[in-house]
Image (cartoon, rainbow, N blue to C red; front, side, top):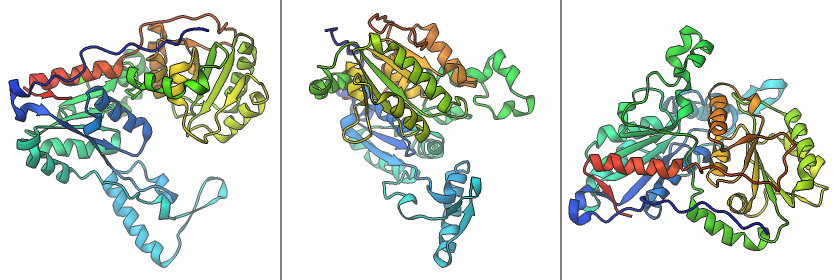
Amino acid sequence: MRPIRLPEPPSGISGSPEIFARGVHGVIRSAVVIGNGFAGAENQCIGLVRALGLSARQSLYRVNRPRGGINEWLHWLPVSLHKKLEQFFRRINCSWRLQIPAKGHRVMPFSFGEKGLPDILEADANHIANMARENFDKDGPLLVVASGRDTIHVSSSIRRLAPESVFVVQIQHPRSHLSRFDLVVTPRHDYYPLTPHAQEQIPWFLRRWITPCEPPGRNVVLTVGALHQADSAALRKAASAWHDELASLPKPLLVVNIGGPSGNCRYGVDLAKQLASMLQTVLSSCGSVRISFSRRTPEKVSKMLVKELSANPKVYIWDGEGPNPHLGHLAWADAFVITADSVSMLSEACTTGKPVYVIGAEQCTWKFADFQKSLQERGAARPFTGKEDMSESWSYPPLMDTTEAAIQVKEALSERGWSIIA
């Protein structure tokens, strides 16, 4: 049996108790995470807080954008304006039920209920800023970590309202005015629009609207991929938790993660058929195959793959019921095949140092294509051709984006005379 390979624990991350050297006013003891309701964004915040050793002392706040019905057509609006419109239409909805025709002549009811504003702690900038100021003498500064477009106004307002009491980290590029944040953590491919190749693709009248507008400054930390929670400790815990189910599977174990098409990485059933055919070819060199779909996977894609592969005794397809095996798969897999659309899934898999094969990269455009190129140049990922012998392994220096970002946060805090006690 091939021995399980897990990334080694990073060094230099755990917080040092500098409370005696710097006093209580310079030691960060807790963190606030500001999310937008999307796992891909919130996991990055939680992953960074975890790497900083503050996961046991974090509070989650959320910018709640209205969802459901016509709200899905209004996601481009600023959250504040979107909420005002939602309240206006809610009042109308009390008198009569508004029907909005959707694509394909279907009728989309303007409904609220379960799909309206969720009952969760609202991210209010004034409240969080006041809390940071009032607790500063007792608890020291407050670390604020946010991610996603909808969180930008809240996190920047907190820093404006309580600049001496908070340290604000914004994950993902906020498009402009980066000085509003103490630190910005963003992938290198967000700066793809500044390259000569990208400039050839952008009409001149659109360039001022394309992220970003200027090169990274001192307060910008560049990563290869997305931050996440799949660190060494998490994978070792998952290896133990999933031992009984995964350890005895015939080796090599190939894990296949399917995402969903996006604006810059379009695909459909054709790619699913291609993937099914390729997997049939490599099955002879696999001991077992585990397939998982994400929440973004189109039903027609998942159904096609289930139809083509579920009858094979080597193949297990997770149906979404019961505990999510994702971390267990990361810990126990010998190799991965991942669709090119998901920066998060690729970033997590490339943290393991195990072979990662990508399907659909040729469908990617814009900065998604630049991300795929960067993974291949690092030797962290290869195109999936269906001709691979899965019994042959290869390795590369694992991506350590979350760990490296945490180090940069601690260095920035140190320049300000602050530290983290974990």
